[in-house]
Amino acid sequence: MPTNVTAEYLAAEEEYRNARTIPEKIRALEKMYSTVPKHKGTEKLRLQIKRRLAELRKELEKQRMLQKKGGGYSLSVKKEGAAQIVLVGMPNVGKSSLLKLLTGADVEVDNYQFTTVEPVPGMMDYGGIKIQLVEVPGLVEGAALGRGMGTQLLSVIRNADAVAIVVDLSNDPVRQMRILLREFERAGIKLNKRRPRVTIKRTPTGGIVINGQENIMGDIGEVMKMLREERIHSAEITVKEPVTLEDFADAIDDSLVWKRAIVIGNKGDVPGSKEGYEALLREYADKFPIIPISAKKRANIDRLREELYKLAGIIRVFTKSPGEEPAYPPIAMKKGATVIDVARRIHKEFAKNFRYARVWGKSVKFPGQRVGPDHVLEDGDIVEVHIRG
Ligand SMILES: Nc1nc2c(ncn2[C@@H]2O[C@H](COP(=O)(O)OP(=O)(O)OP(=O)(O)O)[C@@H](O)[C@H]2O)c(=O)[nH]1
Ligand SMILES: [Mg+2]
Image 1 (cartoon, rainbow, N blue to C red):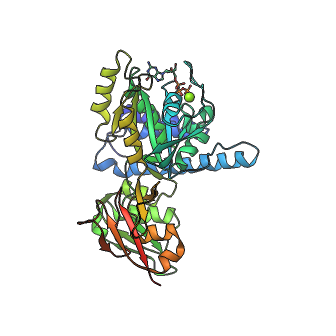
Image 2 (spheres, rainbow, N blue to C red):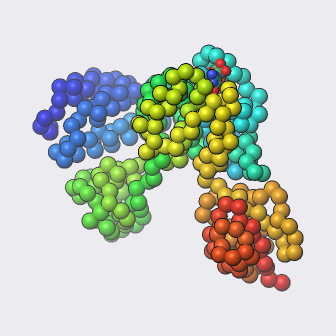
Image 3 (tube, rainbow, N blue to C red):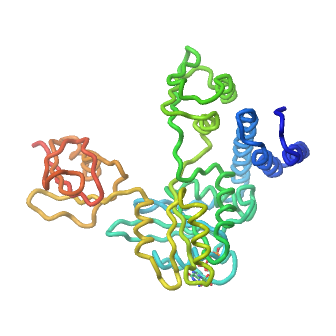
């Protein structure tokens, strides 16, 4: 038992011992975690709590899967278009209004909570690229612990490519963010972070080998313990950047998902929204792009469409044949796509018989530059593939 834990911590620990259900245990552990003083001496304790929380999250997910088999239902939405972005927020913040505005989807808008009761998709056009937006019914405190279909809703979010959080700027948006972020955390959804650069390659024999061990900022004994608990007995582990023990725990936790996210501040036309926006900026500007809008007045919607497009993580590439104009619409590729990826998309013969390509646009120094198969493309580039024979 570490010294100097607070009375609050001890009370939370007592609550944990008395907890019977998984949600009760999770709430108690969260309290323990938030009341442990943060210093070197409590590092192991914090790690233990976090690991226990991760275990409980997996158990909750398992229960949910069993319920699903037993006749419960899932709410998944089939992906269409170049990327799927979910619109998520608390009830009545204007998610449906936005969906309607951006995609023309036929969805009910009304001034009471839970107007939308299941996920609703719509298709947004951005310069010829289709991006699917999905409104997720309002999330509430406790969603990840099973309240109001919350676990099903969060699994829709886990499946999406990216997340757009919608808040009502006129109604304490910082409080809305706190509630939502806690539910994301509980559901194992990490926003605007990336998985720590730790790779684990299981090996048949040879025990644990750690490359870059100097990057682990903490007790290596704890690392070994975590690996044993995960039943990793023989593996080559490479730590490519400095990590804390908690980062390491995240890196080996395969129940976590990592998503890019933005925050949409809606109802910017309502009195009090300016103060709400400023408070939101103070708290969250370093973690999320925050876009203030008004769905009602259609204010700042072009900027929002641009931000949603950026969030989707795709680029538009125009293809052309020699001596002809570029074809429209462009094709959507993942950021980081190369010339050979484009050739493959056109036709597999194009990839097989690839000789070189000519490229116009941001990724090249001069128009029509000749490039090889591994040349990385940028948004708006024009590609002309030349093949053998
Ligand atoms: N003043 C103002 N009202 C808005 C704005 N956007 C939406 N509303 C109103 O807010 C209410 C809720 O809008 P919805 O689009 O149904 O909200 P929702 O988030 O989809 O609600 P649920 O599906 O119930 O969670 C409606 O009365 C809308 O007209 C806005 O920008 N400004
Ligand atoms: Mg709605």
